Length: 346
Ligand code: SF4
Image (cartoon, helix red, strand yellow):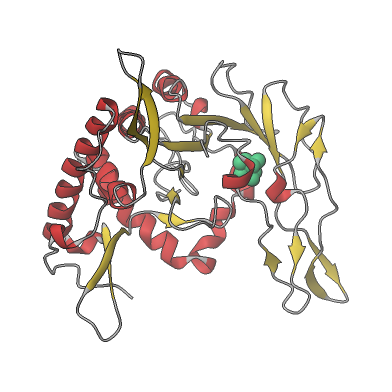
């Protein structure tokens, strides 16, 4: 249920923690000021461009009172986490990013990646996420894209309970101050990939501004030499984990200190030898066989490691609902596991 996107929102009526009674760590204060400024900007843009549905205004049933505003430009992802709204995903259309042919005919996606891509089914299975990614495409072409993402995220960030910490004073006494916010996890690109230097630099700006948030992204953009410099800078940020994804037909990613690799296996759970810097191995989520004239889902055998490297716990074994035959989400989420996002602070 969407609220009236063009109805003005009274910013003051939305509850955010009042920090005026606390002494803030100077760094944290600057962080809060930036969030507030970007938040005001995002509200203005939201009212000027209601079709983009940057924000989502929920209304209580039988009541005109608006519930807190939510950032509609982000999607939720069962794999990333299921706690509150603190695990979000940003998506853009695959056709315009990873699948788009460059002048030399190459694409960011490898041939195997194109065959194997789970996003291909989303038009049927997750039409609302695909529709959202198309609106996000318009948002990311705007010059204020970074500010809009920061401002939309501020809707969550400003309402989270900040953490108190002790800071030593010059006289040696310890003083209680607000020094950080609870952890949040942000996956960049459930579908889509980094396709220009400008876009990567916008994410550098976003990650620097949202310093209490941990970001992670799997990417094949290393296949485009013109994007490598900016991608490497993104990977060097302490709160942005870039994993260079590869498969049997992608070629081998560059060896970068701050960017481990992620290997994607074939449908039969085979692939190339895992590189030493491979942090995680992904396998196919579906295994179909023809049985008695019908296509059936067969549970995959458990595989915890491939060539000595960890198989993503989320994909170690696929469970199916006995009644419907549909795949069930495994219990482990990225928020619990943290293999791909080790800087996530709890
Ligand atoms: S290995 Fe862990 S953090 Fe990485 S995708 Fe799988 S569940 Fe998420």
